[in-house]
Structures are given as structure tokens and as C-alpha cells.
Amino acid sequence: MPILTVDQVMHAYVTNQSAVLALDHLSLNVERGEFLSFLGPSGCGKTTLLSIIAGLIEPTKGRVLIEGKEIYTMRQTIGYMLQHDYLFPWKTIKQNVTLGLKLTGKYSEKTEKQTLALLHQIGLRDVDDRYPNELSGGMRQRAALVRTLATDPKILLLDEPFSALDYQTKLKLEDLVWETLKQYRKTALLVTHDIGEAIAMSDRIVLFTARPGKIQKIVTVPDSLKACTPFQARQHPDFPPLFQMIWKELENIEQT
Amino acid sequence: MNKHEWLQRIYDQHLSHEKREKRIVRLFQIMIMVLFFSLWEIASRFRWIDPLLFSSPSSVWHLLITKLRDHTLLAHTTVTLTETVLGFIVGTIIGVCFATMLWWFPRVSKIVDPYLVILNAMPKVALGPILIVALGPNMTSIVAMGAIISIIITTIVVYTSFKEVDANYIKVLQTFGATKRQWFIEAILPASFPTIISTLKVNVGLSWVGVIVGEFLVSKQGLGYMIIYGFQVFNFTLVLLSLLMIALLSSIMYQLVSWLEKKLVKGA
Ligand SMILES: Nc1ncnc2c1ncn2[C@@H]1O[C@H](COP(=O)(O)OP(=O)(O)OP(=O)(O)O)[C@@H](O)[C@H]1O
Ligand SMILES: [Mg+2]
Image (cartoon, rainbow over all chains, first blue to last red; front, side, top):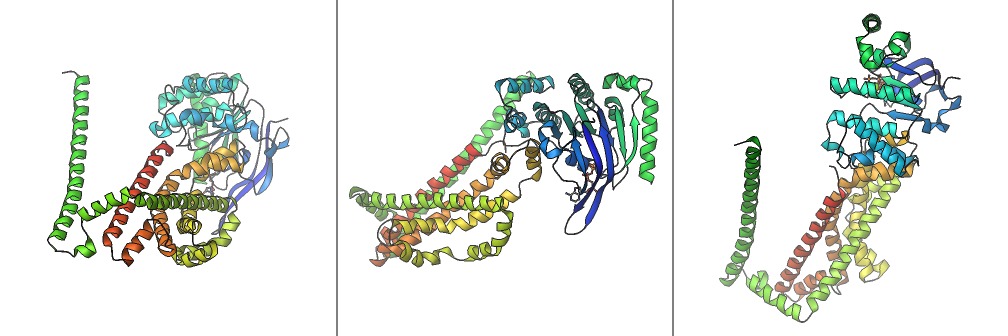
């Protein structure tokens, strides 16, 4: 059974001014341990889809199942990192990253230690007792990533998690996240605007049409690239042709 | 000279500059005060102003000593201070509770909205006589005056800040399955602390107004009573002494709130 099923989901944003269709009959199956990337023009509904999968907004039509069950019973299996970091400015970094543990009742000395270890591993040392406004954008994004990983969710939803990072840190973090997820066979959905990142990290890449978002095409990444770490994949001879292919598809989407 | 020493030097320069600036400001502040009191004293001595009406610093000082000796000043001050602090605390707490309720039940807030506007526009001190009749001419009705004057405005301001908290913080909490109570404790309330503190600062002033007017009306004891009494027996030295006491105490209360602000508002 797929770990995640998106079944004929439609979503319209209704305001006093108008009703706007954001997602149109979208269906998708994701297997356990799979890594999917979402690529598509800005405003096509990627964030909307993640919010629906996370159970934050209810789809106007259709349903989302996790291991065959309705999402609201399965909240704890999902970790969602929002598009901006939304660290709580009045909490220290340590309080921020352990927030999920406290709210889900998973807080213990052991889990706190693990979380802080992860924070250090990801390159944030000596910031435990600092406040978010003392950190750079990239540091904040990493802290937000740790906050999401801390509760050990089975499915990770990542909305442009590496967008505020410099290129080097980004490549290093890609490898770190990829290895962690593979090691624990986590399922992940990643929204990105970086084609290279999508190829380097994913098993499948979902291309969206412009609004209302529909699936234009699902590209399966060849096994040769899947076996490599993201950093190696970027050097692999199979990488450039796939990049070209996706580039052309996205051009087509923008023209239609 | 190496880089480290150089950095140390510009840092020291910065510090001494700040220090000097602070000293200059302080100097002028003290000068204004000294000038004000000396001018007042001189004007009164030379009869540029009527000493019966405007008194003089020296007579206020003598009265202060007398009143301290016979313990009446301390008694009146304690009464007024207690009433004000109580009115201030009660008003703020009830106001924040109302705001919480409105946040919790959005429909209630839509329904009561026009009534809040009316209540806010109403001059609360006009309710004084009614309060005194209802609660009796005693401390309770004066505390009620001190409280009622700040409740509605606290409710409105704090509720507005609750509503303006970025919904994405709630989203973060929701992804961890937080309850509505946890939304309030983890995001809404701490995000609104700066607003709550600034209403506290306003409420300090408002409670003094409520309490002094209450004491005018009840006319039994307190600094407000001293003012009214001094006015009736044409003893303006007494009136001015009370005013100076009020100025002193209310600025101490204000300082306490500022201190609380530093403690509560983190990471801003
Ligand atoms: N709360 C809302 N109310 C009304 N319309 C909305 C709301 N949120 C999103 N939309 C609209 O729905 C569409 C999809 O938005 P969404 O945020 O899902 O796009 P996205 O693919 O994540 O874009 P980006 O890549 O820029 O983050 C957009 O056209 C947006 O204008
Ligand atoms: Mg988005």
C-alpha cells in the first residue's frame, strides 16, 4: 500500500472578492522511502498541496490518505517545514527546535540531546541560547529544518528548505538530509525551484502546470543517479541530459 | 598597532562618546528642574505670582515636613497608592481576559464589536456617581473607578494585537498537533507581550485619573481628597503637595512597568 495517496484533490481559495482554483484534480501515489520533488511555476499551488497533505487546509474536493487512513488521525506521522522559517522570535534556538517534542509529548532528556546533536551536525554550534534574530537567514532555515526533523516524522514535507542558503552550504546540507532520510527510510516531498537539486535528491520529479496546478508530467530519475549522493549525482554523466529534458518541459509549461 | 588594539580603541571611543552624551542630557534635565523650582520660589517671594494661589516650593516643603511628622501624608498616600495599584491590576487583568475571550470566540467578537466602540467612546469617569451609589462610598468603588477606566481600551488594543499575530506561527504549531490552548500559550500571548506592556504604560496613567476622580467624589481620604479639601479651604500649598506626590508615585509606577518590559520581552 502506498504510504501517501492524493486522490482527485481540488482546491479553491474562496475570499470575499472571488473564488480562485489553485489545484485541479490532482492524484498521486507515494511509496514508503520515496523522495519526490515538485517543480513548477510560481503560484501553481505547490505550497497549497503540501498544506493539504499536512492537514492544515481541507481540500475543497477529494481526499488525502496516509497508510490508507484519513489524515487528521495521522498528524504525528507528518513533519512540515514551511516556506519561511517561522522560528518563534521570543524563544531561544534550543526552545525553538524542541518545540515539536514538547507539543507531541516526545520530550525527554534523550530526545533533547539528539535534537541538539543534530543542530550541531548541521553546522549550528554555540547558538542554543541565542534568539532567532541574532542568526542569519541560512542559519535560521537550518534551525527550522532541525525543528521539523526533531519529532522524527515518517513523511517529511519540505517547502524550499534550502532557498536561503549559500551554494556550498546547500550542497552539503543536501547530502546530509539525503543520507539521513535514506538511512531511516523516510518518505519526503520537496518543493524547489532548482532543477539540479530536484534531480540530485529525488527518485521522481513531479512537474506542475501553471495555475490551476495539475500534474504535467512525472519524471523518474534513472537508477544510476538515484544510487549517488546528491553531490556525486551533480557530477554524473546522466545528469546533464536529464537537466536539459526537464528544462525543456518547464519551458513548454510556461509557454502554454 | 595591531588590529585588535585598534578595534579596542574605537570601541572605547564609542563608549566614552555615549557616556558624554548621557551626561549632557542628564545635566540639562537637572538644570530644568532646578531652574523651575528656583523661578517658582523667586516669583512667589517677589509677588510676581500670588503666593496664596501658587504657593512656593519652600512652603510646600514645610508642609511636607509637618504632614510627615503627624503621619497624615503617609496615610493618605498609602490609601491612594493601594487603590491605584489595585485598579491598575484589576483593569489590566479583566481587559486581557476579555480580549482572550474575544479571540477564543470569534463570533462573539463580531457581535459585541459595536458595543465595544460605544463603551470606549463613553467617558468612564461619568459613571462615578453611579458606581458610588451601587458599591457604597468606600474604597471598593474607587478601585472600580481606577479599573473601569482602562478595561475597555485594554480589551480593544490587546484583542487587536492577538488578531494580528502571524497565522503562520499557528500553522507551525498545528503541524505538531497543538490544541487551541497551546496556540494561545505558545504563540498568541508571547507575540502580544510588547502590546500588552505598552497598554500597561497607558493604564498606569488612566488608573490615576480614575482613582483621583473617585476620591474627589467620595471625599474621605487619599491624595484626591487632599486636593479637594485644600481647594475648599483655599490651602493651595496642600493641593500642590498632593500633586507633587502624585507625579512622583506615578513615575515610579511607570519605571516599574518599564523594568517589567525588559524582563518579559525577549528576542525583540
Ligand atoms: N490564502 C489564500 N487566499 C487566496 N488565494 C491564495 C491563498 N494562498 C494561495 N493563494 C493562491 O493560490 C495559488 C497557489 O498558491 P501557492 O502558495 O500554493 O503557490 P506555490 O506554487 O507555492 O508558489 P511559490 O512557488 O511562489 O511558493 C496562487 O495563485 C495564490 O495566489
Ligand atoms: Mg510556495
